Image 1 (tube, one colour):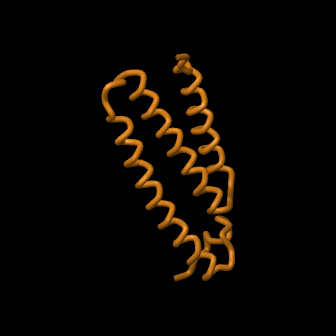
Image 2 (cartoon, helix red, strand yellow):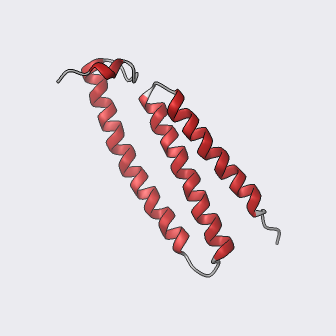
Image 3 (spheres, one colour):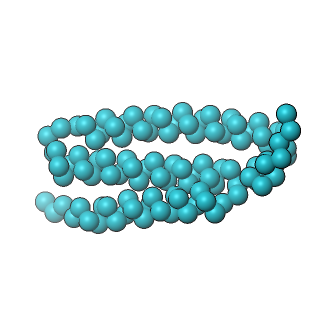
Length: 104
C-alpha cells in the first residue's frame, strides 16, 4: 500500500491556508470572506488528520479535534450568514466598505 508523503499533504494544507488568508484580506464581499475563513479551518483539519495518522496511528485524537472544528465551523457559518442577511436587509449591500458607516 502506497502512502502519500507527509510533505505533499502539508503542502496542500499550507496552500489552502494561504489562499484562505489571501481571500480574507483582499475580498470586500462578506460571503467571500466567510468562505475564506472556512478554507483556513479546513486546512487546520487536514493538519490534524495528517499528524494523527503519521504520529499516532493507533489513536484518534486528531479525528476528534477535526470533528469538533467541523461542528464549530458549521455553527459559525450559520451565525455569520444570519448576520450577513440582517446587514443586507438594513443596508442593501454586503460589501464591507458599505457597511463601515453603520448607524444604530
